[in-house]
Length: 185
Image 1 (tube, one colour):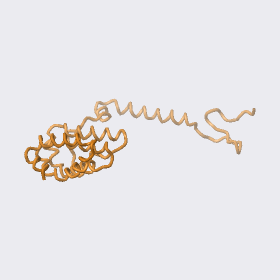
Image 2: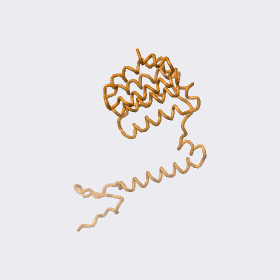
Image 3: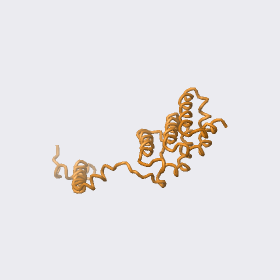
Image 4: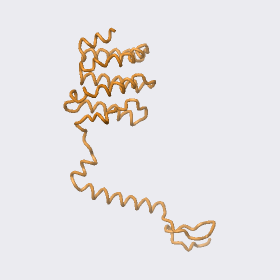
């Protein structure tokens, strides 16, 4: 066995040329990056403001420019995030006043989820529609005609007959008599 003239870990001998290349081992590079990241996180996390930035709280604002619940996601964890994010947006203080002006932007997203071929996406869209009706109440009645066509297509499927019927009952309960008239058209 021939001894290398290169110090171990710091330089690697090239098999072809026999020369020592100045290279840092992968482990050394990882250690260096980890140390830099730790020093950055400890220096920035020392103030209370930095801690709040690391763990943001749910916002009490519904920003109309960024509202897109992403209900058509099909991969985990995005499905969970879209479902829970939509629910949490509707739980903020003064949600009815904040969500009602956003209905024109939410209805196309809900409709797209309700016509999606994936059953999970349809179920999340149906759940979101019911949650939205609970929050905005009769304000949703003007937009029901856009959503009911999608629901009527899936009503023929035995698997969705019960959830859709239940959702329609909840829409009627929260929307009042006008929503019942929309169903009968």
